[in-house]
Amino acid sequence: MDKDPCIRVEYRLKGDFHPFANFYKTCINLAKTGFIKITNWIKIVIYPTSNPNAGILDSKNQRGVALVSVLIIVALISLAVSLMWQQQASNLNNTKHIINSNQAISYLYSIEAWTQSILKNNDAKVDDTEEDWAKEIPPILIPNGIIAGKISDFQARVNINQIITINQDAGQAFLNPNYNGCLNTLNTLLEQDFMSDFILDYINTRQPLQKFAHLSQFKQVEGIEFKDYLKIKPYLYASEQNNPININTASAKVISCLHPDLSPSAAESIITSRPFKSLADAQRAIQQALNGLTFGQVTKKFNNKLISINSHYFLLESDININNTHLKAQTLFHRKSNLISVVERSYQQIIE
Image 1 (spheres, rainbow, N blue to C red):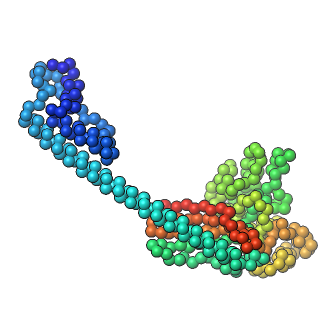
Image 2: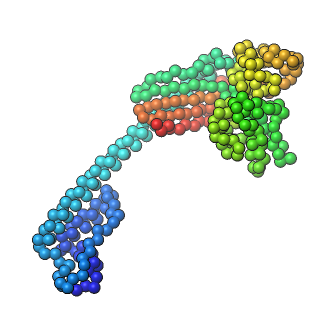
């Protein structure tokens, strides 16, 4: 008798004469197809006995084991078939998702082409909220879905990089005096803590000193909470270009931050005088709102580097739904003369 009957039985499992041999081979063949994975060996334990034939099953037991083997094999085959159908269903869903996503992106390109056409045909000398580009695109029905979008003036916001001035020789960043208190005013109107000190600390602790490449870097600034970033985001943008603020499209909060004496109500009075067809018209409206300043003082402060009546950058926000695929996208356009180019495009799929 073998010293270890467990080992003897495991050897017999691999023999052609054992009733479990076909079951063993079937498992191996199924594993090779990739439909099942053998993660655990079946181990049969036979306790030691004085009978020299203890590891040999009699013919009756062999028939019983053979029946059990057949049932197990049938179950495994059923499982393999079920897994195949599940895999095919998963592949089909993935294919549908890819097709819908590609279709959504194609619609995005179509909306972008429409936006370029609108901006190209628009009078570039003056941009205001009464023009065609400023009208929100109503929801449009498409096969198996719907699309919507709107164009906004990017220069209706404050360029965060124009608030900051960097002196590379001194190795320090500080606030631009032309925008003195602008960011703090926005924070006050939005009921937030002041962010300017946090931003200066963030820039001054990084070498070499660099301004913001993208507004999303705000999320990395220590001291600025994510909820405050989301709240101030519609009023700011980050660009290397020094772009004036379009007084024809800026909100009351943005206009208020341009001068310490411009209260929200004074900013609203400027808005009621829009649209301005010339910079001088805008400056006169600002003088009336400020009262205490002469026209010369206003023109010196509110010059063409600080404000404008037209824009060069526009943002398209698209919302596309096809079947169960929901795509949100943002496309930034730059207009120079009659040339409209895409500066930046970003999109994400919304899981609902």
